[in-house]
Length: 332
Ligand code: MTE
Image (cartoon, rainbow, N blue to C red; front, side, top):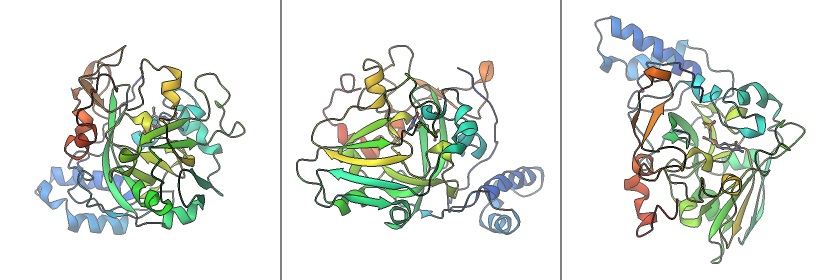
């Protein structure tokens, strides 16, 4: 696997109020400058950040502000991944299979108008225009580790609100046990839809309690901006304790069902990708170990640093209870 390395050297400050990309990038320069001077890291806090916000031009995408989330597990002191890495090293197979393909090809994705249809076992099914969906609940910034099944990870500040907010409004019926996510499959704008890599559209699913968990984020933005196309604009799911492929991009349908739905990678290779796909260092992929991971930006090739992968991607305290008593080797 080819890994691009662009180490940011940027320590994310303790607060995570949402800021435009230019500010994030500017802060990195500020921190470098501070490191050379008399000021300690502590100075790279509110005052200097506020000053930076005044002078650094915002990113080219429209801002999407979110208040710092108070949901347990939604903040971290870890170093943020570079915006550039997070937006140019992607998996979005509708736009190509190389990590660099989505950023090159996803410009064709048309994100307006956009409708998300909610259907199935709910009392209030309906179609949500994207602007209404964005306004449905207050936007929050959540800093999540994203661990890909391939063995790399990033730390990304997402903007959105808990999927539970939407679920509560549509009133699921008692028989609704799972939520299925259907993503866009438009052969006109997505060059790889129609290829035989996957069974299109790319679909994903969660058990109802997983979908209702406050960490499950209906996501509209990242780094204080609306989502770039290659990251799943205009709306995606982010489920931080599961491998990245559970986080479907560019969602057009959310369906409430009784039976466990089929999912894109499970259909493609059931022995390699299970329905649950919780990050688990003790359950290896049949072709490689899942015990360690490499943070994108922390060196590549021979110089790649690897760190231990944590059970449930480090969110065990928050989500472990969902799987109490389950054999995680069987339900991988
Ligand atoms: N969603 C769709 N529709 N198509 C995809 O190919 N790839 C998944 C997931 N969502 C994918 C998708 C995989 S494998 C990963 S690791 C994450 O998106 C990557 O998200 P990122 O590019 O924002 O890091």
